[in-house]
Figure 1 (spheres, one colour):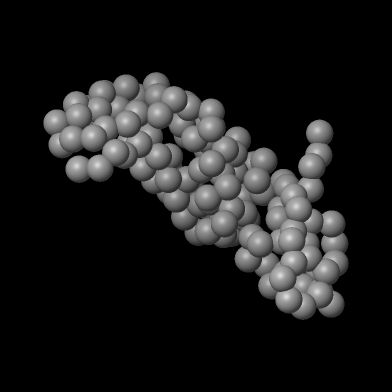
Figure 2 (tube, helix red, strand yellow; figure 1 turned 30 degrees about the vertical axis):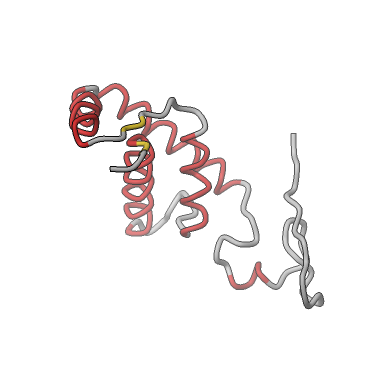
Length: 125
């Protein structure tokens, strides 16, 4: 077995469950594109301690600990909602909206450029 962060699996599962539920909703509250899901997962993973394992035995012990701690799951769900809210509020041009891919708005590449381009993130704060 290779080195693996089990919290990453848990966070991705939670983000996917929330986004899948939002996609079924008639009025979704969050952006649910694959890029948005990855950004939200990064938001959560940068705020929680990792739980690395390198063996099947470590995997079993850590999974037992994670399954037995319902508060950590609640904390991850709350962080996932916060991450999805923030990511949805600060839409990027690569979130899958075809109209925004060709726009010249802040955060997106100009439509008239061809060839290699660099897109620098919008820094707010």
